Image (cartoon, rainbow over all chains, first blue to last red; front, side):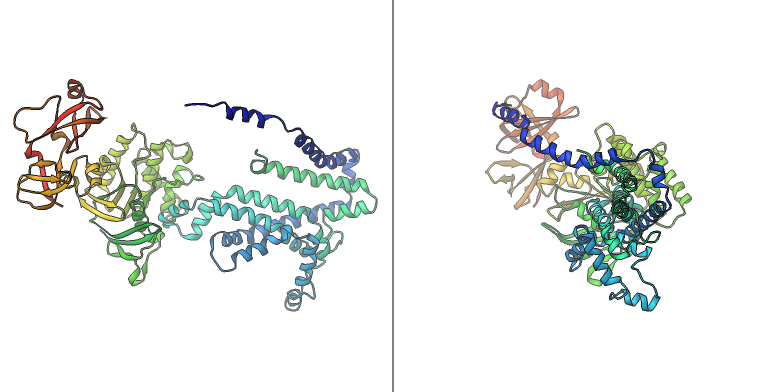
Length: 272
Length: 351
């Protein structure tokens, strides 16, 4: 083997810390860290419990939990078959279908709320049928909150699971078939366990997104305490009304949840 | 009983009327160079690849027959597969891997586990039942994969390079066990391999597949005595020559003459010389051998206590001699050498 000196010298050059980039990166990190620090500095640590145990706050917490978990359940229930169809089935318009499913990830949530209203509102083209045949309306109800949150959160589950279904080694499914396992059994006993980590990650991601949902919820379901006022809405209201302590206390709860989800997913995202 | 004629085009591979027939209780080896289509044959038999034309019939049940619109899904076939990559389910224990088949075929969970335990015992890996596949050694994983394939008691067992992934120390014992299991296996077994020892140890009948075609079938002796292609000659380890037969034997393309045979054949012919029939000498040998060539040693391959010496000569030849004769002769690559073969050791046959 002949080793020339040239590559080594080049290596030395690339190893020299790029000062400018480090400074810019430092500014950016500060930009992300500062709001968090602000929140922690101004937190009403002394009466945090009191702030969180007012009836309105407890209602908002409970409602948020119920709605976000329901939205996650719906995302999983509909998302698994949807991801499977997108990943495994060849059909005309598949790209369009995927684009439609992914749209809420980039769509401004408030636009999503307006669009939901026009479809599922009392006068919406589907909503008026729901009203006529079943006598129920979605806007300004807890069910409406769940619909809005599912609309925004499910795409996160679907992209995660679809990617997993694409990358799973299909020969395991073939092996299962040769052992006498039908399609559905194979999916349940082989495919789903193999993509288990992605299922959990997708569900956690969509849950976090549902929990923080604001724009679509307030547009589609309004801001009725105990009925449609979830935590983000309560935070906004408290903040607007000058009750900064209450807003901060609620915000801390959401920060805690977010950090927990992030730590839970660290193997997927924070592994550098 | 298996009866199949396989015709399929997959990318650049074209299986061209590959016929496979085997009676229950027999084992067939499919051998051939890489890319010949061996694994595709197994995939077709297992129902993972569909035929373009032809048919697959197992025990009078038509599994695939595109002309008559017959198709049987893999899960409905009585076929067990030991994949080359094993494909043990990583999320299931060894026991659950083996119980997967019986369970999928409708047994209750407890019965499936009992059956799995029995099969693990038969393959001497009962103590690994609780382990995950990733904790197993190569030989252990191979045994579990075989147990998993056999646990459904299939009528057709397909093994894709069942021993190739193992190291030299675990291979012989597993080969012996596999021979034992195949001897008692009531259905048809098809083994894909490129290892001659494996093919000869396991199979009653060998099908040689080259570039999507069957170039030769027969048992080991037939292949050794009458190899029809360079691949087969290499596979069984004999010298094969192509040329024109005359009264004395075979004339090669370069004009060199190989003396032997009955002298009754004319036209295109093949001749075979077993490496053990080739004698090597440092100087021109006296006496009777009719075939004597001067050449140089190209290289020397040790093979157990014997060595194979490849000699470049007008008639290139491989000799197999004992390690001690090699030492006596003091031969090494690049050295001049004389090779001789008795005329009676040369078999000439029709091409």
